[in-house]
Length: 200
Image (cartoon, rainbow, N blue to C red; front, top):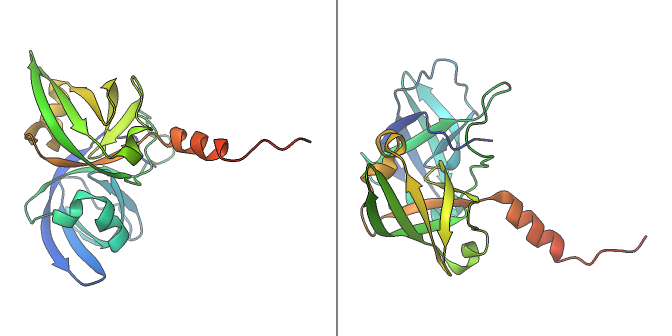
């Protein structure tokens, strides 16, 4: 589990693509000394398993399922990546409960400057739109954000100066694609509603 509070903006050092999977190596300023093989790290909001590590670097393998649902299918070496190690007992829950299971990809449609802040509109597919609600939570490239307004297939968020300077969202331009994870609770409610209540 994660909270959507980014701890470092790393970068992709190396990409090795195979027919059934892709291997990536990430550089980070975080101290990897206590990390273990098999630990989880959210990379642009996508929960990846550490398969190898060295000082300030780690590797992970991405399956076809992961590549098909995330912006990593078009990743390039040198791309900036938001990083958050998995929660540990006693860690502060500063954002919201994030699983690291990316639902799909959204596209940046508009940017509006409001003083030092930016209001950004994202378009998302039909199958994700119903899970995004005003004043609810959404995860964009691993960043926990509050939804300001929702439309049929779009929503807006407000990025404060800290978010702009401490994540890769500050460098996004119109047309950019991002990883989207909607609030998990909406999916559970929808699934429960598919089954009639049984009388005892």
